[in-house]
Image (cartoon, rainbow, N blue to C red; front, top):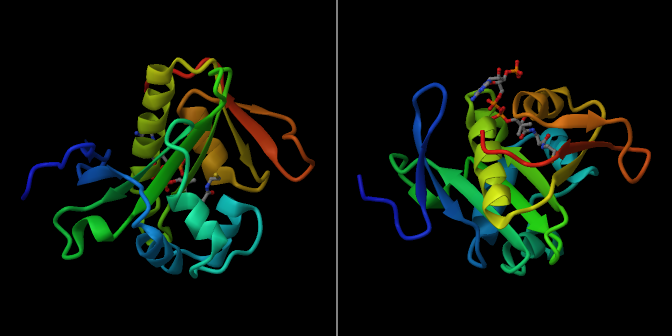
Length: 180
Ligand SMILES: CC(C)(COP(=O)(O)OP(=O)(O)OC[C@H]1O[C@@H](n2cnc3c(N)ncnc32)[C@H](O)[C@@H]1OP(=O)(O)O)[C@@H](O)C(=O)NCCC(=O)NCCS
């Protein structure tokens, strides 16, 4: 198996599966759409807070073309699978205020790959970025019925606040973010 390319990193899930993280970039529209097509409409709704179609368009472009001075995103893949880096299993994203006062995170694991520990790996990676950047805290908005995400936030050391900036979400926060 080839060694990780520059900017990539090997990870091992709690089940011992060896995966690799790579940055998400401008050529990833197709890979993100493929991951979304292999996810359930409900998982997409939990990630984006409304029904989204897994097809080319402004949403996908915004996820691949972003300001790298204020945002970072990484996708996980299995280098042993035939399509390797082209087949994304999950993506985590962090964007932050220029004054480093706070960041905001979002995450999705492909529906057929959930509950194998990848979500925890991606959260750990994202919290490591926050520590390296020196962010004072990391927030996230989560739909209140998203019990899997709320459990994962708690198990990663985050807290759940009663209400997000609107009435449809709860706010989760890592204050201050710590490596896990
Ligand atoms: C929320 C989400 C990212 C979790 O990803 P996941 O890969 O299924 O999560 P994990 O496999 O790491 O964790 C799930 C289980 O594995 C266990 N686990 C795995 N790794 C673990 C670790 N390192 N430490 C502790 N527990 C771990 C947990 O006990 C957990 O069990 P639980 O569900 O009974 O609490 C995923 O469900 C998802 O993509 N949902 C749709 C999108 C979404 O909701 N995004 C969040 C809003 S931005």
